[in-house]
Image (cartoon, rainbow, N blue to C red; front, side):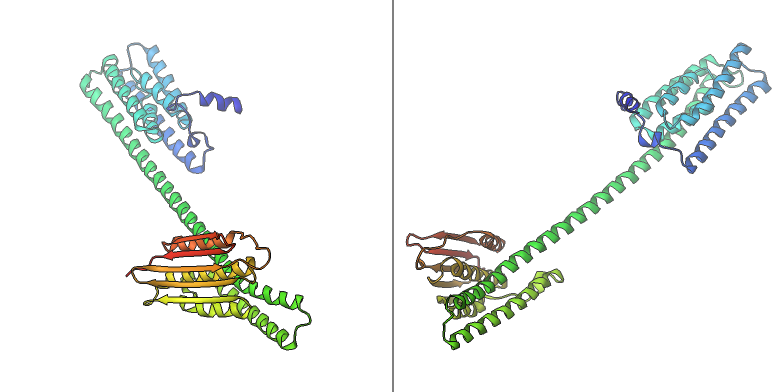
Amino acid sequence: MNDHRRVAAKKPAWLRSDAMDVSPRRPRDWIVDSLLFGFAVAFGLLSAWGRVSTGHQFIHPVLFNLDQVLGVLGCVAVWWRRRFPVELALVTVVIGSWSELIAGATIVALFNLAVHRPPRVTGGVFGLSLLSCVAYAVLRPDPADPGPVVFLLGASIYGMVTGWGMVIHHRRQLATSRRDREDQMATEVRLRAEQAQLQAREAIAREMHDVLGHRLSLLSVHAGALEFRPDAPPEDVARAAKIIRESAHQALQDLRDVIGVLRAPVRELPQPTLAEVGRLTEESARAGMRVTLTEKIEGEVPGLIGRTGYRIVQEGLTNARKHAPGAAVEVAVTGAPGLGLTVEVRNGRPPGDPSIHSGGQGLNGLAERVALAGGRLTHNGQSDGGWVLAAWLPWPS
């Protein structure tokens, strides 16, 4: 099997057998091959009968008998037309230059070649068949028909069957290219769907980080206070427990909203706006943070810009609570149409040893949000040990 494949690979491209040539015959193939074989036999028998009935056999009876043998062999070879289309066409055309009884097999071979091989190969063999017609008109003169008439008749028959085969070949090529385009379109649709799913997952991940990170950090602060101050007054314990319960309830509600991304586009979900920044800083203040908010907004902030600004403040407060506990935090939001929206979250040096900012997934996701809004994001440490998270967002006039 492997040796056969290696030998086939060494053949020229126009002689190689494709998958259709070597595949097992289906019932439809058996029917077609039987019909073509019957046509070749019938054409040969009619030619032989015409010669015998008129007495115009050939120059010598021995050569006429040889003509009949070649005609039979040509008809039998038709059964291998799928495996050897080029070879069969070449052999029958060459023999047809003086053999009349192989003409039926030659017609079948030319038609089969035109169907299964490129036009360049078909055209070359068809040109050889025209030369064969000329040779036959010279070598087999017929007193009843002049040589030019014999040539034109043979060339017309060969031309018709070759043209018919080329039409079928082109129709098959068009059908194949159409299937390829359909497969390509199906692949593109699948890739777009996978890309949309990936973007949805990324959106869910960003929402979960931004929303749950803020709520869980509040829970951590209050739970830590209860842990380190077990002797706190009952009213302080009750207040911290109330905040923990409210924060946990709000975290569950936010989680339901985020999971809703799986059932509806993100734009259809309720999204925070810049007007809720005040509530955000109040929650942080109730958690024990020293937060001051400065807002100078002129006009109504567009939805995308407002949501992005809210997430910037949320991420900045969460990072300050995690990495600089006890430090003062200043939030400044300023902007106007045509000037853009500027958001800045600055925290000072925390008491004790400052925690190093991780700059992990939260800031990476925030940078993606800002980039999608067409803005700029910066975050860096200060000489006094503090940290600044700042962003500028475009606000069309």
